[in-house]
Image 1 (cartoon, rainbow over the protein chains, first blue to last red):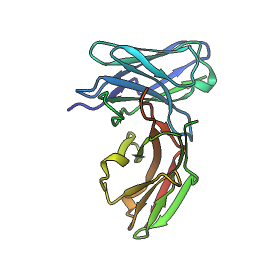
Image 2: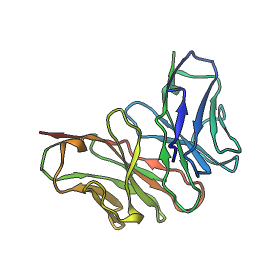
Image 3: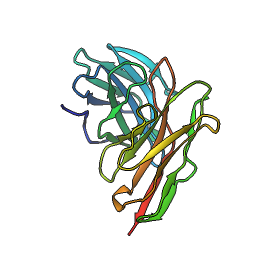
Image 4: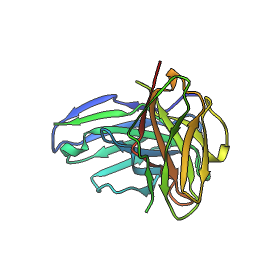
Length: 113
Length: 110
């Protein structure tokens, strides 16, 4: 069984740029959730994808967008980067039933200068 | 509003001592509660969840709906328990998002 993987591990961007982060789900999972974890904080829910459609969104602006592909992998895109977007971005996969456990990837650390 | 509060940012105990990490939540329905742990240089991983009622690595957590708490306990702490612990709730129905607390860093001293 393959766990959740994310790429890249680290990324440095400048303000105003755009970034794409990638996530591969754990084998057998069909749902992907993205979280932002700022330094010293718990993860915050960005959005979730199920069957290639957004299935719930947290309090994040529209410049945060995502995709889910037929193989259940996913991308998180952030446009017009701001300094406050510097954080660890976590992807979690699960099998969509009622309140199923989410399994996390190692994260992508983004630094915006 | 859905909220998880972990009142202790840092908790330090000696090896062999009991440990309790506090978690209180705010949610009007019937949430599922989780404890996740992050060891140094490792990914966030599930420690236990309420519905499974399992004891993992000697840890247990009891859901107290009256006090809206889900405290994590272990009778005898070990040095390898040193880690960051996050309490989280998943609302009932709808988007299955996790709402996390800010975490408690547990240090078990020899």
